[in-house]
Image (cartoon, rainbow, N blue to C red; front, side):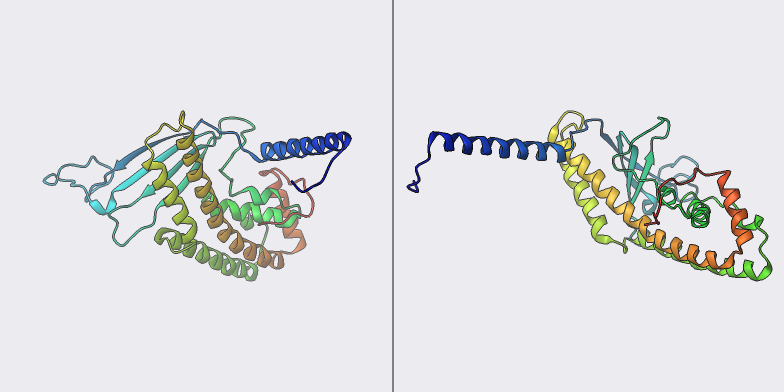
Length: 280
């Protein structure tokens, strides 16, 4: 077509090059393609809560514990290899409340590898500086596990140090509360939350079985992927507040107090192995 004549040897060479390029393209695509995981399913149900007492059964409108529409929850549970992921919607909440997204990881299997769930404690494992690791362990446990280890009360801080620690803790707590409030109202990273709900709507509209139907399965994974991105970004918001708290506490503790805290945490937590890593 272009008026170029190729010898037989040149044609063989060109064909060989095209074969190599095709093979390379195949392996690139294959290496980046995630095999479909059909171990995913979902259940949708509604929870109704009473106006008088949420702990006793809801009665009809004329009963002693009539349903309160503003407390109604529409729940979609995804069961998959990581464990479970719940999306809770509040269709009649007043004022408007944004959906809640929660991962409940499978923890019974040793060596469990998660696809979408990311333990919010993971940044602690990446910190190799002994003091920062100790401070991060206690602080992340308080923020994400809702458990106070009270280790700083055991290192012998004086009244001035305790006052500084209380002030830093107050700032951290306020920032976490502000983030949680923004999550409840949907005013933080709304774009990511919208992606979750759009993916969920598309998933719900398809009536296939995610354990058998490829399209339905892919829609399920899109929901899980979007939810993971949103939950991780919320965790990062709290990570920044924790970093500021750790920076302040490094200046508050004396060397001896720091060593006491390190020893206390060493008894409770696995020690990091990588060098030079810092929190997110």
